[in-house]
Amino acid sequence: MSAQIDQFVHQLLPAQHLRAEYLHLEEDFHNWTSLNVVQKLFDRVKERDLMHRPFLISPDHSLTYEQAHEQVQIISAHLIQDLKLVPGNRVLLRGVNSIALALSWLAVVNAGLVAVCTMPLLRSKELKEIILKSKPSLYLCQNELVEELNLARTELGLTTQQINFDVDHISGELKASTQGLKGLPCSFATEPSDVALLAFTSGTTGEPKAAIHTHADILSACFAWPKHVLQARETDLVMGSPPLAFTFGLGGLLIFPMYAACAVYYHDVPYRPQTMVDIMRQVGCTICYTAPTFYRQMASFIKDHPVPTLRISVSAGEALPEASRTLWRQASGLEMVDGIGSTEMFHIFISSGPGVMKPGAVGKVVPGYQACVLDEEGQELAPNTIGRLAVKGPTACKYLNDDRQTKYVQRGWNITGDLFTQDEDGYFFYQARDDDMIITAGYNVSAPEVEDSLLSHPLVLECAVVGQKDLERGMVVKAFCVLKEGHAPSSALIQELQDHVKTHLAPYKYPRIIECVDQLPRTQTGKLQRFKLKQLD
Ligand code: 3UK
Image (cartoon, rainbow, N blue to C red; front, side, top):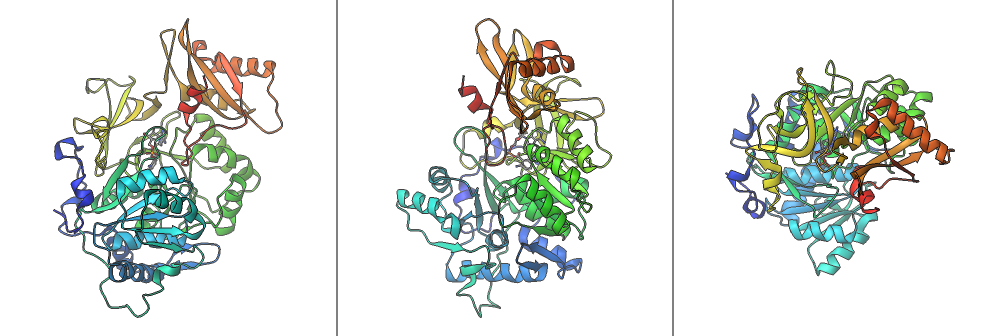
């Protein structure tokens, strides 16, 4: 059932038989009669008597839960009453992580509207694809980022209403005409299966897909990884680099802090590795989220400038090489929490954590989820055998009107596209994306495994390994390396790197070709774009 009046997204949900099986949590939010995830999260803070606690913090502003709640109500009222939006309408959000963006997101979902988050760096071409798929009724855009959005709208001939906001003026124009609206309805009693979010995949190739998440999905996600693994406290201060338009960032830097009633800090300019360490120290950060490469780059700074308050560092988005885990541990004294999640599943479903750590493993399945490794026919494989990762839980893949639903969901399982092994103790070991396995002269070589070995060499800052077509061997292993500052490539160094790999791994895995480059192609969420390196061949 659905209470949303505009049924656009509901009508484009995959048919029931194409959906993954949901696993129900002890408290099954999917079966409640009414649920609005934003109202529920604020209510929990209220019940715990923590509304006076700090919530949203920036260099110039700080809002308590009480103040943020009031702002959210005002913006929601504006959306419903002045702008005449109807529950179920989509609202496109465009901005860097900021208090204004966070309040806007919360107000949109609180009002029963559907948030369509877009990455700040997207260009008009990419914005057009998102607009055509999601058909927003309103655009909320940070002043500094209007240009590409205007271009997209002009090219599509759209005149839909748009409000531009300023990150420095909390909710800026959003509340300009709402003075005195207090007391009028501003939130909407959605049902658990009503849609809260369209999350566009940051996929490394192809046309973007929109993953649909309901109010029950997002609340359920809070009662899985954040409850059992992260275990944040109300005194925590969270910080990190992933955008709120990426569900890794949305969960980590907005939803899960609310679940814990703790504070989150948004910086006014993009983080660089050194500034991130400095700011963590200045603001007293206790929990930090970013991608593996960023931790690698922060390691050298945090070593000399420790952040004594930091107690949890979470890495996700890409495989965490063992060499990077070690480097970070030595530099910061912290054991990394590595978690694999996806846009389709909303957040992390396999993770390391307190007492859950094995060298080389991502971790164990998060309570609330089930995971296993399947063969091509969908049969569960014996321990330590490479196969396709399959996951089920209280969140599930639901693409908006997309044939690729049948690729991600098979026989009720969510198939992430990753190759894994699982050992007898239930630890999951990442091998590769299913298209990143290199088959050379009949041997299987996982690209990340070779990268991990190269990264353990002291002169390698970053690297990427791909298969290059080869007449004799079918494919050969090729590595692209970024050297640490002050080191130049030479044939002696390349030989040294090859020998380094041969002493760590089976010799057939060593990269026969090594090319030194200045930087590697990455997506806006920090994922390596191996396909671009393959195209270079
Ligand atoms: C890869 C990892 C190894 C893996 C995400 C945490 O990354 C997120 O979502 P995306 O949709 O990509 C999903 C794919 O990324 N991946 C992510 N984390 C890891 N591979 N180790 C990891 N720790 O291929 C996965 O299928 O962009 C991550 C929370 C929310 C997210 N959306």
